[in-house]
Amino acid sequence: MNRVYVCNCFGVTEAQVKKHAEGGACTPRQIASACKAGTDCGSCVRRIQALLGRDAYPRRELAGQGMPVLSEAEELEEAA
Image (cartoon, rainbow, N blue to C red; front, side, top):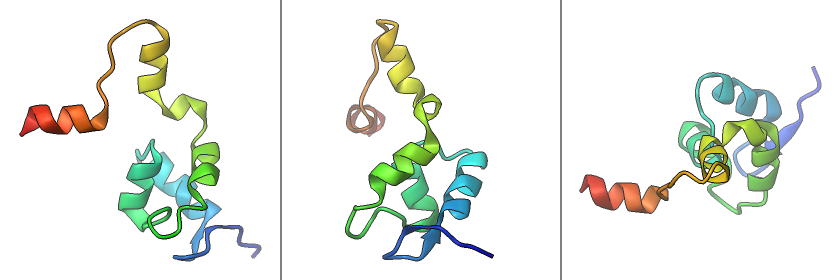
């Protein structure tokens, strides 16, 4: 079995990232919460973004339609 590693720091494979994405993770931050990928040196974050694909970012789609989109930090402040 040929494993393609996305995150060498934590030994996370491409297959694992895809599995988490199928399970609902749609941002690098959500992938990080699921398996730590991207939380150490950060060199794999762009690869994770590429694996998730452009359709994985509904906020960008909304912003492209001229709809207001809050950043995660603003949402957290509002919730507090």
